[in-house]
Image (tube, rainbow, N blue to C red; front, side, top):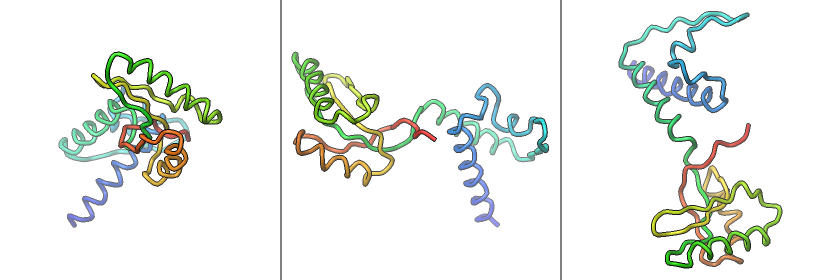
Length: 156
């Protein structure tokens, strides 16, 4: 019985994540109230659960709304500190753009994490996806490597 209950909770949390990612969830309304609203040409859902489950799910929604992305990988092609690091980062970014003109420029992320200036590229869900492009990048940028990062939600 306990396994069935845990399975149900996991499925519900997954469903919440899907609804939030697709953008149909109105973030101004708590999630369970949103589900129970009557909509035109649809049925009505009544949910009976303890307040602890309700608060747990609302906490999950709040954390993921604040996070603004999912766990994934990027390729770091540059990292340096010092007086010229900002200019070097701009140069490395332009080198990358000229080397890979078909690469989506919106997936190039300049970062400043004191005292380091960094350039990261791509939004990859798995390390295998990142590794495919990394094998090309490492030829031009030998100091590059794959890093874990919070990436943007993929386009649907």
